[in-house]
Length: 453
Ligand code: HEC
Ligand code: HEC
Image (tube, rainbow, N blue to C red):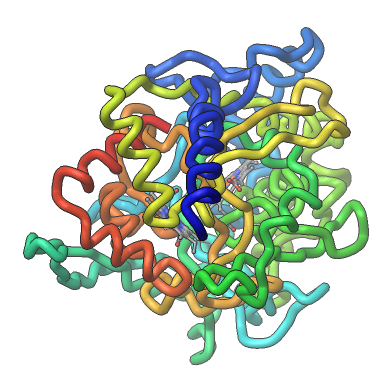
């Protein structure tokens, strides 16, 4: 690049930086709150009807389901096997889950399991006797599938300035397996519940804009590829781009919601109508069931709307010095090659208020090889055992406030934001090494900046 083009780009950067750091990362519907409810508010710009649906959806999201037969018909349907009794039990205050403390029961960390090879529609291949997710609980007279156990393995490293650090990684085993040992080649993917805000805006980004960042052959030779997941879309009856879940393994919020109702709570809908009982699980198969879907389409749509309309909190203001240095660092360390700051949502989307919004999620919604350290070695549609969807960074600094913890990454292994960066590898190896090379002052500034997004 010659001096003139450099000058031209620096001139461009000034307005771009202004755009890259607005007060309202979630567009017009962003809300101003730094309280414990910061993730639970509806977008400010929605219609009265949408607001009504939001609050009905919210009540379903928060209610505890109970097993059949129950005196309140609208609450029955839990199980026969399940992991939690409500959505909010895992998505605590619409925020994120975490691994259990020593001696605590598992709740917001669940286990997807499968065997090598492809299952229905090219998705994960379920494990005989258990299916594709471990069910930690059963209703009366129905056995739980297994009790997960977690052990933490420590590893050590040093920053370039000589400061040491320690990381921890979970080792998972299962006790009390009710239907025999898991096969030797079983693949296990521990995943914590993700935060719920801003998801409708991510759904409203056009396929075209997501695909614009794909670089499968690394044609610009920066070591960063980015690949879209394509997953089975139950309503469209074809493969469509995956956007939700840690591996972009769900295409829409409707399907993710219906999948959670069945997979995590045992509640069936018109989208996933089968009972969640592998054929050896006789007590599960014989448990009382409703003749019709346990949740109606109308109510499923309202819960989906709830997940679409939770607003993104406004940014927290930081000192100019941190703002300027933080912006520079996320650029110089190439964080924003994956954590893409800005999108404009599509002009066509069923919910009017989500259209044409300037949003700053800091994700490309694409899959990246994150190296051996983060690998779960379990493929999920096109995502390999080393690939994960770039996690959005908006609102991440408020997790501490809302969820009273700072556990990050897909299995919650990182105990703070810095550890999350130190686990980056594969396509992000260079970015991580650059971070390790920063001065303590710059490391602090970058973290404070991330917390303000
Ligand atoms: C047992 C814990 C648990 C329960 C209960 C649960 N979830 Fe989740 N949720 C998760 C986990 C774990 C993920 C990530 C899944 C993955 O990567 O495959 C997730 C992901 C999601 C996502 C996608 C978020 C994103 O950023 O991509 C949505 C939406 C969601 N859940 C909605 C719901 C709804 C609605 C309910 C209730 C019907 C629910 N969940 C119940 C654990 C849970
Ligand atoms: C090659 C793409 C890539 C680059 C470059 C990259 N990241 Fe990430 N980042 C990811 C992916 C993918 C995840 C999710 C990994 C997981 O959960 O296992 C992630 C997760 C994170 C998380 C945790 C988020 C959460 O919700 O738990 C933070 C914080 C983060 N990145 C910050 C950074 C910073 C800061 C940089 C630059 C120093 C950076 N990343 C560079 C792809 C990237």
